[in-house]
Image (tube, rainbow, N blue to C red):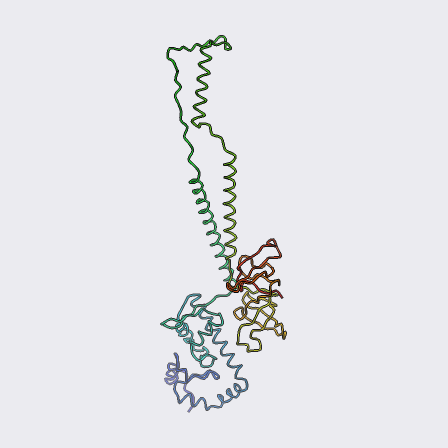
Length: 389
């Protein structure tokens, strides 16, 4: 019997039945064929085309498995980033939207048996933030696009500048209030009335001869001037600046400036980034996925790609590997050896390891280059510096 016509009722019924999601156990990923029932899947498995595909897959099964796994991972992450961005979402919601596409890669053809295993793998590889709740597993996409990272850094820098301006203004106002409270209130001058000692005494003015005045007038004017000077001196109407107080105020101003500079330096120390890889540093491989041959081996970073990935060269064998920073850790040299600061306010400065504090998992570094040469940095965490190759 020939194939039914495209507009025949049977062909239309077959197309209606083929719509939507069918059972996963009746799908053949190698042939990309979906069967509607067990009998159809059995007939397909016995077909010649399916047998040829199985022979091809049996020659190199890992290649087909890796291909399907990469396709599934890329399509899943592309949907997660495009549809939900960096929002926290249930993994089953993303998976249901992913399988709505009829030509998607099915999970039974990948290296993961369940969606939970795939979610845990995303968390271990650093592709997503995952957490388990009573309602199930939630995932959050980590956007490591250079443009996105640059935009976030600019926003954080602008926010920090605004906060610094507000803190400086508040600090200045607080300092002014403190100084205002510390200084004593100025004394108000007390004025006295100008009274004659005797009512009977007369004052004579000689307008013709300015030089000659009566003895009584001269004595009276001298007594009046002396009284006025005494009252002005005693009342404190005339105040002069004390040089000792002026020097003290200048010292206070200088000390406030020093405090602001110390605060800025303390903020510098707390600046941290989520990436730390730098060329020509010695690192240690901490992932077991590469086998015992590379586990706990030391290597030198030759090139940094997109801030989070590095091409390293093993010290012993000379092999080159491409690894993420989550698979590496810093190497602490012996005291007296050169190191490079990888994170914090002193990032990018070379120095010499002075001493190690094993209790606090930190070390003391002496910077030996740049404008900060000679400065001693204490309590620097192990993960913020590494040995220089």
